Image (cartoon, rainbow, N blue to C red):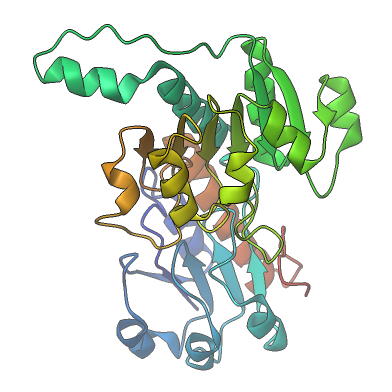
Length: 316
């Protein structure tokens, strides 16, 4: 049996996931993240499993892989995988929702603090020979609004409590028990926008969340508020974000994700009140190792042990 990986971080810090697959009778082929379908096609006919990060998995690719039994997302979001097409073909689709929650929550808070204290600006000016006195804003005691109080959003909330922040949240599916235990108030979207000093986004990209934050929403935010997107590109309307930041409708924003990735340039990159990172929130050694282990365990479960894998995302 054969496994194809196009995830750039699969087995990056440990070869144990590859060893585990080989011990269970699998050959492993790895390709770069930007591999094209034309380049993959010659290798798909005898592929039994795919491990993917950003590769688009649609009907055309699936038609080239008649033996395919499982697609494992090396991460959380499955918006690059055609769930209906895989379901129609009886192919499992799994993700790993918990393995990188601490890494992403840490990174979210790093972006929040970088915005509040203008750390990138201070770094650039100091290295440029200046000795700036930058008067920024506090995080301590402020109000944070978390959109998407799931696995990652909950971890952001716990970190926020360490900064004595008031935590409010919006979610389509409310975990009232967690909120009550940790003193979190669920509010509607407009109230969250109006009250929050910092807004963090932790939502999948769906029809309901596309353009969840557009210019209308930003105009409802405080002029001194900051927006952090560590979820998916497309949840924030990027053209509207540029307009809002350029006109100082809000104080600043940071995004680890973009609607089109990878990016070499973007109008937002020219703004001094915008922080951009390259979809790296979940990239720590511990998180990557855990994600890889979970992927290969699901492959062995589905194809060797013939049992249902964990975290099936396409309704099979």
